[in-house]
Amino acid sequence: MKNNQPQNKQLPATWHNNHSAELSFGQKIADQVAQGMGSWTFIIVQSIIVGIWMMLNIVGIVNHWDPYPFILLNLLFSTQAAYAAPIIMMAQNRQNERDRVQAMADFQTNVDAKKEIEELQLQLNQIETEKLDKIIKLLEKLNTK
Image 1 (cartoon, helix red, strand yellow):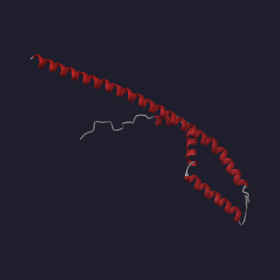
Image 2 (cartoon, one colour; image 1 turned 45 degrees about the vertical axis):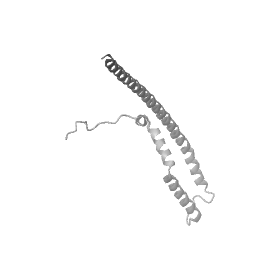
Image 3 (cartoon, one colour; image 1 turned 60 degrees about the horizontal axis):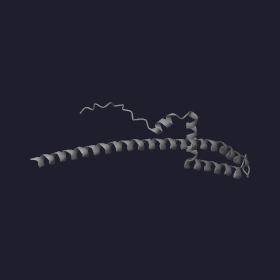
Image 4 (tube, one colour; image 1 turned 60 degrees about the vertical axis):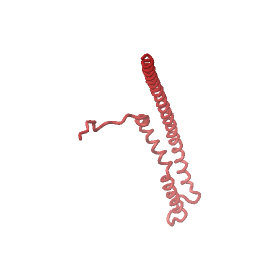
């Protein structure tokens, strides 16, 4: 059995595909950083690194590069937070924009569906009217005989 359909049929563009295609390189990086920093993998890896850092500086035999109050570690966390916060905010702003675009697409879909339903209702009413007219004509023919 032969299939006459084209093999490389592309799916229609969705609002998400269109929105993703419009993102700049920096926006894509910000989304990936926010996604990475908001994961359990990041929290676990960072906790392991901090634990090792603290253990090596408390129990370190040879060199304590960051003794007990861990000032260098606090500086690293502050630097990380200073860069992470705006990057995450950029990603959240884009998520808000995506949500707005999706809501508009959903609204347009609902409006289109409403129009189609109204058209179908009109067609059904017309069919019903035509059927009733035919029934009335048949009844009139029967009454005249």
